[in-house]
Length: 466
Image 1: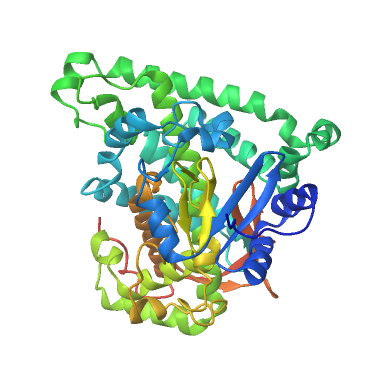
Image 2: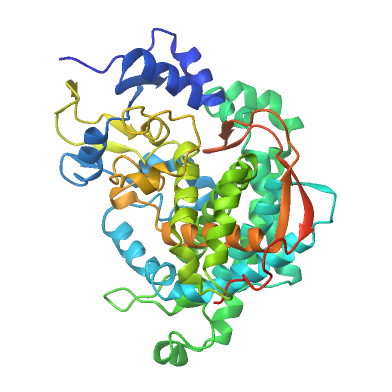
């Protein structure tokens, strides 16, 4: 039996490298071992990683056959997202929840979120002072969190909304450092670090946030009597919580309060942090390379006054910029894991039943055979070629493909268009910015500072008509 190769370093060294610098470690392993390799991240935990498009297609399209996607493999998310999150459940329960969650996040529902995205982006960006630098990540996080609070919960500027925003922000900041990830593999560090680290408050913050979320669910239920809810599922409210409360599965069963909480916190946290990071990377590159910004401004100008949000969504160069951003810096480094159900051969290697395998999104997006000069930010590559869903997969694939991908793409494009139409920004930060681990996803290694040079730098009429 020929198993995929693995580093010669000890298990502890592999764990430390993976916890602190997973992307550079994957680069190193791929250069030495090729398309498929193993890492020993526990005494009985040998994980396989592949960047080969054919192998990725095999593992993502054979769900429930040769490969499965059990939710228990994602239990690292359970403390925050809960036992009923789409990420942590499997089988029929996963299928049921996914079917209930799909309608509010796709199709014509997107249009109803356009105005929310535009208004919040405008408010936040106009609050930045002329000539004074600001943290790009702070701004994009504020925008995406407020968008999710309004689109998911229908919560506008209220004491409850502001407190939930603060608690979720604190939880994410406290638990997303590489150091806290290292605690997963080296528990002794937790006993040393935690008493002095903000993460020691995370459980208390989460409990308070949960209490506020359950209050919101109860309040909405009290305002939506059962008979009225059944007869008018789309009435008066278009936020995702109201829509999910009105939804029923094939047997007529609605979601419980606990299921609502777990799914909504998953949408809120996953949709906020990841989209904010992607938007920040895009703004960074747009202003690092003036020709890209100029091309985008020209394309926006040709869209006419008050272009419909769907017109903005379909702009080809804006789409290419967003795709190139998600290629060069995919927020999710890996697909959700698959489990080998029967012995298989993949890329010339033998995988035993029970083997856990990941598609490496990060490595796939940096293959020179797919993306020449992969370290170069070049949106044009997405205008020149159409990539398969196993070559370009920023949202994963198969039954575990990100359910909020349409919302994330829609939001990313509208936010970028609104900012470009409203203000002329300047990149203040000099030097290289590169990706680092932020919890279970990736982010920037340093604060990117921007500056507002002027407002309404292009035709002020080029705003989004929603």
